[in-house]
Image 1 (cartoon, rainbow, N blue to C red):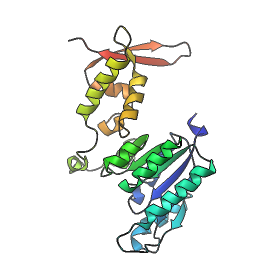
Image 2 (image 1 turned 60 degrees about the vertical axis):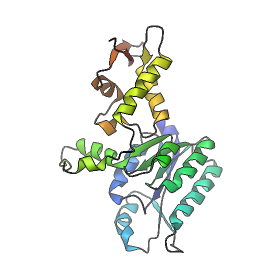
Image 3 (image 1 turned 135 degrees about the horizontal axis):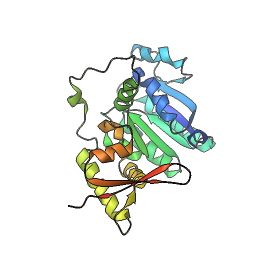
Image 4 (image 1 turned 180 degrees about the horizontal axis):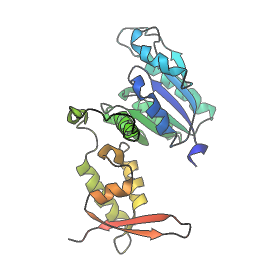
Length: 251
């Protein structure tokens, strides 16, 4: 169960906005329990003031890191050292690294080499090397948008300029469609069928930033149906749950 997996949530205050704090912890709750909650930055600087207001109510421990040299990011080093200390303590099964900085690419790779589940979170400007180094990567703008849509009392975000927010480097729909067809051909049975859940798992492994919410959907099966490329059948199991199968449509 997700609640059995313990996570260390490490936040880079220099590269993530405080407005995403609620979405960060709501999302990691889907994966497990945040046992470490630390945030790193130079708290003597005025630009981190928005973070100070949310630390206490979210029980986040601020770690002070002075900028010893101009142009050098000492915060990154502090996060990396703490991550390795936590790793060797053996007290967690996963890490959530919250940053839009590619400097954490090697850290994510190193943690995965040690058997850790690594969930990355950052803005859409996050460089692809860091995205690919994580088991899963979640874009904070997407998480925030989804949360707001679920809250009827809040107004929708303005639509202007949204086209500029989508980076060219984010895995495209065209790439996802091609990958799904490949996964089906590689894993289908003699009749061409493959479990939808299996396809979703493979996609997540190949594209850590793949999330159906990036394309406006809440669940994987509705997303698959919208592509109009596949046949879908459902199967009711003895435990009362339903599993779905897909295969390529015949031309």
